[in-house]
Image (cartoon, rainbow, N blue to C red; front, side, top):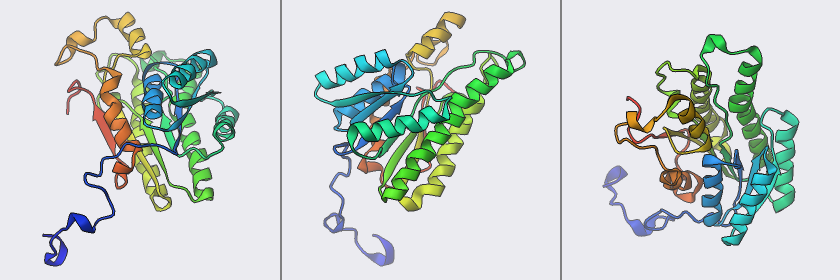
Length: 270
């Protein structure tokens, strides 16, 4: 029974049964940090579901190789240089995405980030500024740039910001500022969702735990076998995030905004 005793009738809704489509045909996705790791996988997944994907990072040679892989698999991808610490580069990347596709960016995956791997009192001011700039300031500026253009064009959009389980739990082993920035990314997802919901722009986040990636390789090299200390004695496989990414980017999540989904295989305390 629904409101006022009305019996819910599936035939009376405009949504399919089930409402679970992940068809991204006609969408343009901008994926930052796509030259390796999670961003590399995210770009392939979105392209496989029909989105035109703009892959952005500093290492353009890797982006070109990724674009070729996506094209060979039947998708569409365009490599674009992006330095998240450079305001002009951020705006130029959005311009380049529009020029390459002839459309507005309707899906933004804020994935680019760097670890600090140092205890707070040992970090130089330069390193502090770099981590804050790449992990937080850059994604904020990019989100606003994409939103500004969508609002002007009266188009809806989806944004997925990659936070971390470190946003909710810090064991004290180093990378304190990384934890701070990822907590801020989670909060950014919540507050920008409130600001832009009236324009049809959904903003959500994913907070991964320890997943196999280039960044994780560096951590393992420094501290040893991280997987051994997890409940299931394993690192996550990036493929285990595919369904969550697609859900947040697809029509199926139309009513979901301001949410941060943790995918950590039970690695972090609740």
